[in-house]
Amino acid sequence: MNEIKLQTPVDPGRSAVEISLKDTTVVLGSCFADNIGKKMEAFGFDVLVNPFGTLYNPVSVTEAAARLGSGEAFKAEECVRMGAGSDLVCSFSHNTSFARETQEDFLEYANLSLGQSSQMWKKATKVIVTLGTAFCFRHIQSGRTVANCLKIDGREFIRYRLDVEGTVALLERMMEENPAKEFIFTISPIRHLKDGAHGNQLSKSTLLLAVDRICTEYPGRADYFPAYEIVLDELRDYRFYAEDLVHPSGQAVECLWSRFLDFCLPAGEREEILAREKVLKRSAHRPLH
Image 1: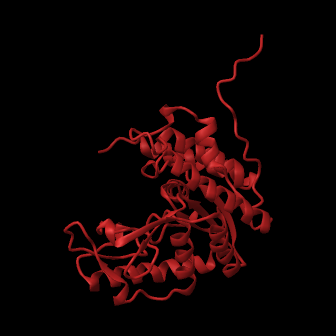
Image 2: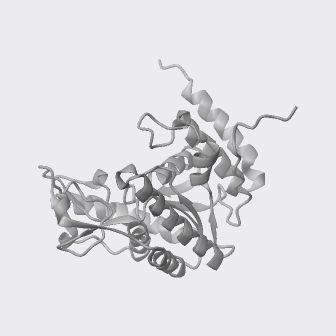
Image 3: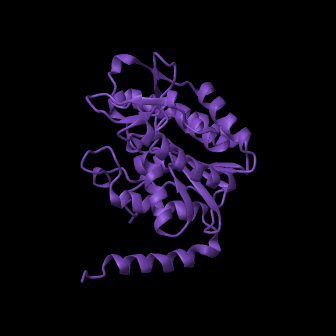
């Protein structure tokens, strides 16, 4: 009797870019970057996770990398008063988690964070980049493509979709500006259904084609981890999604984390990770006194 197959396995293979517990790694990008970055933090990797907050589009991700490289302090003219009746101040480079009550407070916080993050970026040899969408919002008055619209009226922005060539150019510049760093790219499995089902597919396809070009152009320095394919093709069931039916569930994140380690962790460090996992599980079940 033939064995019944209930999944279509996706084999990531072994990455040309290894990420060791001994490496300094920076993680940039969408919610999936946050998920992987938090797991790395928990397991004791030397890692910096989204120093400007969650980022979704290639323009914002590559601008973040450039800012970390330059360390150029944020200035008063970059401060933006948030919308929707909020009195908080933020910038178009940051997630709203950075917002503060005054311009002075925001600049102090943002520049303290930038200084520390820039130092870590400069010593980092590995970078994980998760791209979420090719759709971007350009602020009409400033002409800037923004990382976050900061709850400002949508009429103040123009929405556009990057094409493959434009995305490749952004990623090429990031690679060329950081010749000592190696990159692992992923495409977020989180579906951006506000773009519509077809729009989401066009967006993800743009990112996939661009990243494939980069991995071809920079063999040994850039590789691709198929998180998107694992969730959509192998874990093809709504039990692997959170209640919103958009974000991966905790179970899916655990599966992706295990596969990611198989993909890029040096073989000799797997036992150390297993030992740390046991410690984490024991501490999670330790009764409170």
